[in-house]
Image 1 (cartoon, rainbow, N blue to C red):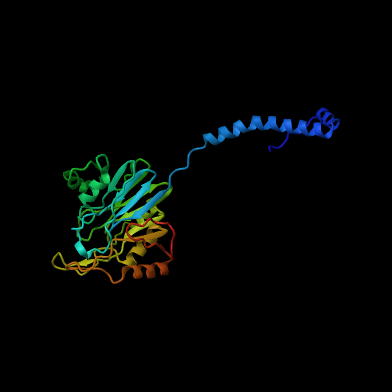
Image 2: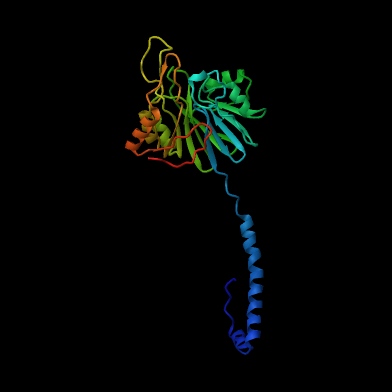
Length: 302
């Protein structure tokens, strides 16, 4: 019941002269009148309050793929569905793509077939979605028949309630590649396709960090497809991924881009998950190992 306003001296004298029953009825009527005048104002204030913004959710897909969900809108990064890309060497489950009812977007880091899979992109975009890529990748994306929007480095692109920004990355072949910073729903993540260590981590962290989660490759791949063979890691190792997360100001690493066994002229570091957890423990960086198809809980394990 709302607090009662003080009575005037005349009203106090009048109430004292009433019998107990009449006094109670008088006070109850006064309180009812006050509530009737206050409640409409409270209801109007509540109606004017904005609806809470939807939270950003993240699901790991196969290989380097990640799905972001913000309300009904869906944004996918490097989705992979084509089983012919790695064949039986990839042990990940190829997760079916389930876009929401709202707008659809796909961001690709570079044009290699394990990151730019036209089958997965068509499934994700449907007839109305937009593929976003760096200008250097636009020709390949357009020739595949997609509606393309380019994103030069460090220039934010608004995608409904998502904001995506391409940032530098370095490819083991020297082919053009970017990483993506995506924010929405009060969170900010960075997704790195299969980059190796480079000197732009500090710039990215200072300009766009910190990050709630960093989706980082950890396979430390070495391959003999190009001659002469370098025998140098062409993708982040687990230890380098931890170093990148520390420089970026990432609260959490979600490891991606590992688990290929038996591919010709290709090797990964031994037991990358265990190596990542050990390196992260030493540097007090959070890690959440998420299997393909699972959603991120945003809880760090150190």
